[in-house]
Amino acid sequence: MDAGVPIKQPVAGISIGMVKEGDKYALLTDIIGDEDHFGDMDFKIAGTQKGITGIQLDLKIDGINEEIMRKTLEQARKARLELLRSMLTEIRRPRKEISMLAPRIETVKIDPEKIGLLIGPGGKNIRQLQEDTGTQIDISDDGTVTIAASKGTGAEDAKARIEAMTEEVRVGRVYNGTVIAIKDFGAFVEIAPGKDGLCHISELSNGFVKNVGDVVKIGDKLEVKVIAVDEQNRVKLSRKALLPDAEEEKAKDDDDSEEEEDLSFDD
Image (tube, rainbow, N blue to C red; front, side, top):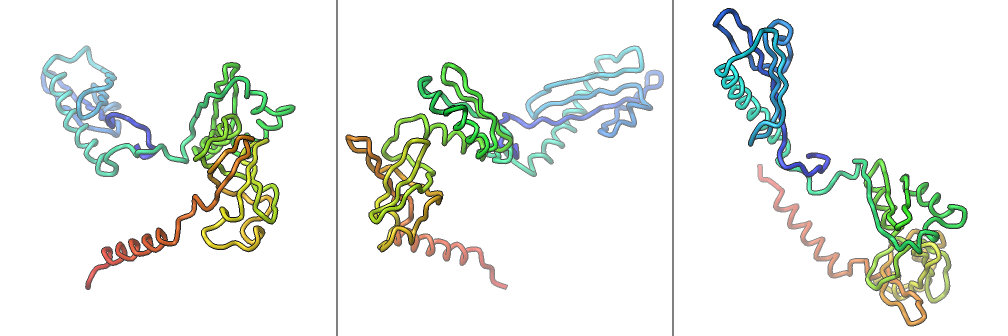
């Protein structure tokens, strides 16, 4: 649950042991194992608060009757619920998002005609992508791309890059690009292999920018938003569109101040 695995119910397990002599017997609630060595029964029962999910029984005697079975299941139910209460005290439900530290496999479907673009000459593009994101990428003939990563951040980064590389540039889409050229009127940003756009000087910052080089330099990573694509497929980008304006910053500062006041305590 802490990793964000969406289970329906947590499961706990308990072992009920038994020591029997003649018609007399005692049931032992135990998770250590002594009764398994010294006793006559080791009845392992696992389940949720709603029911049993698995059982496993070891016996050193000829068998057990219905009375022993019923008492064992009831004793195990009480113990299981106590364990589940302790577990749910620590975490009530699965995290909404899978932990970025958890390994995962992502899939994305691309146009089969774009497979060559993704692979690149001699496999250059796919090798670079795997190296940059720390992932293993496999491509099927139907355009299904499977991304395996030891961490979620790498898988998401690789997926975003693949989509940026193989999809048509759309207005409103955000890219993590690289500045490849600087001109007096703006910066050219590569948003995917073979795809670049112009971020005009007026779109670099909220305030006035005198020189493009004051904000970005060649090789800088830049998050930009597509604001237009003209009839000649020239892409216009904006960094300013992703920056909070002065009024939003002020409002955020005011909210932070109010939160700090709410969290303060009088002696």
